[in-house]
Length: 240
Image: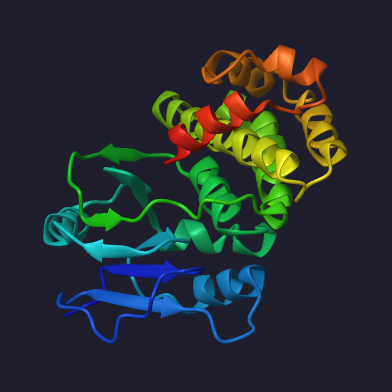
C-alpha cells in the first residue's frame, strides 16, 4: 500500500517498532541530531502524502478514519482533534526555513491554500512537556513575524486556524516562561525582550492580552513578569 501519512517525531516520544496500520511511516531523529537538522531531513525523506509533526508522546486512536480521508482528499491541510495533517509537498517548500516543530507547522500552514476540517481523533497525545524551553523562542518569533507578513493574503479559514494556533502557543509560552522566572531557571529580561519583539506583531500582541485569562497580562508586565506563589500555583493547575 502507498504511504499516505508520515509521522515526524521529535522529543520525548518513545520509538514504536512498527505500526499496526498500512500506509503510515514513522520518522525519528538520530541520536544527537538537532531538531532543525532532523526536520529538514525528514521533510526531504518523508514518503507520505501528508505529514503530521509531533513533539510529544502519542498512541494511535482512530487513525484509520484519517487515512480514509486523506487517501481521497486533495486539500493542503486536514485538521483533526488536537493537530493537523499537512500536505508533504507543501511542507517541503518551507522546511529549510524552520527552527523547530512549531515553526515548521506554522510556516506550512501559512503556505496552504485549502483546508479540510474533520472531527476525527486519530492520535491520543500526551500532555506537552511541562517546562519552559528557551530554544523554542526563535521558532515562535519566526512564526509570529511570518504571520505578520502573510496574514493579509491568507484564506479566511486558514487565517483563523493560524491565528488561533499562534495565540494558544503564546499563552502557554508566557505561562511556562513566568514559572521558569519564578523558579530561577530563566532571567526575567529574556521574557521582557521576547515581549518587546512581539509588540511589532500588534494583532497577536493585542490578542494575547484577551486570550491570557489566567491573569491580567498588562499588570504582570508592570511587575517584570515576576509572579506570586498564588499565580504560580494557578498557572501550574492550568498547565496540568
